[in-house]
Amino acid sequence: MSEDGVATEGEVEWALAGDPAAPAEQVEEVLTALRSTGRTPEVGVDVLRAAAFRLVSEDRLDEVGRGWLELLDAVRAHPDARLADLPPARTD
View (cartoon, rainbow, N blue to C red):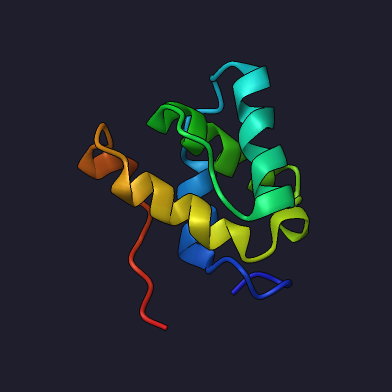
């Protein structure tokens, strides 16, 4: 788990392997929603992956807390998510 206990090491590696290229305003919309409601808005899987990348690469996981798990679940449930987009399964 990460220092704040939210993300596993595998999830951090998954996030950093993602493509950060998504419209900045859409990524910020996801991060704002996670901070305020713990939920993700309906956006493309690329935006969700970019949001995960930004949270991990900028060491901002503490801003969303358990909303991190919602972000991972949103990627897993996204109809356009390919196998390569999916975060690692949790065993806890």
